[in-house]
Image (tube, rainbow over all chains, first blue to last red; front, side, top):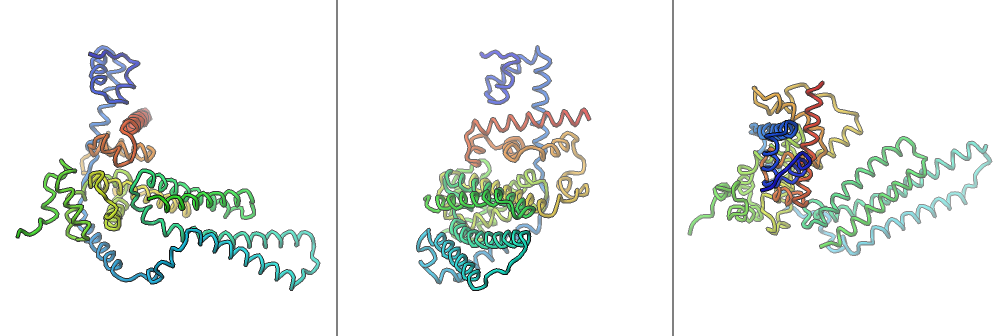
Length: 221
Length: 200
């Protein structure tokens, strides 16, 4: 038979080993502090049992039924992208290639514009502001292209994200949720300070991590 | 030849024996995309799904939205259920994920539009409460909202819904020891919060 003292209280309550709990109860008969703790501990459990409340929701099942029927009907209709067949997933790297091509095209377009329309002399302050605006514009455009590529990747990962079959897939899912939160935070900060290069870099690194995670998740069986 | 059972009929004794034949047959019926099977699922698990969602989200509307989402996700993902865990464990795991997503959506909404106005008494938590309620229970409910989501989940599943640590571990993909630790931390925090309320 186990014997417990005040030092064993946490262990007994944490591990919930019946023998330790029993030993703690015996000890509590002579120890007012442990008796009080044990009583409060049990009171929480008793009160919690009453929290399982039920309420009538006459509209809920019909709502679910409608949603399921709509889902089934949608599943029967051929989806526009299914017509593309295998073209939709020829390679996992096509999104990155598309982003690269778009960025290249954007740079060439920018360069040709500068060559065709040489800038007029402007004051240094105006020039600095224009350069900042132009750089920001280009960054935001490239960023949008990159984000669109990642969204395509996300679309491929949806079935595995929604119903993760393995603990590893579940952990990728959790990681993606955290990354999405981090992206939302970072974007909110950028909205307040568009020209902060550190924030832009941070956002880019989070997107890269998201891309890596999505690629791993898609590869995982 | 005997007609197949109605899904709700298959589930007699389901709550006591989730790995029983009913569980597997219900999963098979859902896999066939039979809406009646989902109705059976709703009759057996709907009330509990709503209760858990309500205790995790604190709002009847959000809880019902989460339950509806569960059914859609079960419908979409039933082919990925291979029977390694009980069907009900799989469903409750989906519910926890749905609640997690709803919480994130609420947080984003609050981020973009500022904190939501305090609800009138009687519109949210109290809406599902019986008229005469125990003050400690009400205090506990309001303290529960201040726990982290991980602690709240384990507390609700173990103390309110009576799941075993082994079942909670399977739902949350964690070890039984971690489930026990989270429960201990949740109760320790609640005990502290309740003590603070009493003093004030």
